[in-house]
Image (cartoon, rainbow, N blue to C red; front, side, top):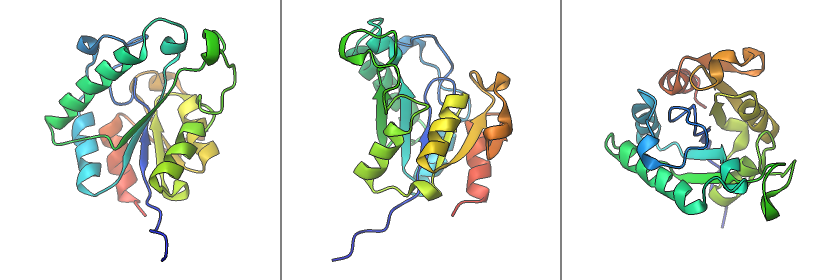
Length: 188
């Protein structure tokens, strides 16, 4: 029996790309989706495009908040997305950081962006074709992780994106909605 063909996906950074940037976001009540983000995710969902969040969460490793806090924030995000018939297919988070505590105190962990580990693991676990996928984020490390995984990369000007050099990006958009529109205009 032949294996199912690999599917392209859209990988999204979380903070500054999907939701407004909040340092060490651990309180679900502080989560605010960027205008148009839920509709952009719903547009991808309607086309059957897997949407995968890949997010560095050094606050967990540094002891600023725990996995339960992270899960509560993601639950709130899922609830807000659901209001617009949108959902995320998978979430990957890296708590690793050079200033973290205990087992998470790893300066260059393979899953911490700019390393591509979260994307590579998602591709393996969900049958995704990285060469036809996109990574969307607001930081240079998002673009580098996507590029190192073999994806095309899009920079959004929300979050920290307004001060990021766009020369490494395949496309630049004001926000996630704009990025999704441009990506879909050249979708495989």
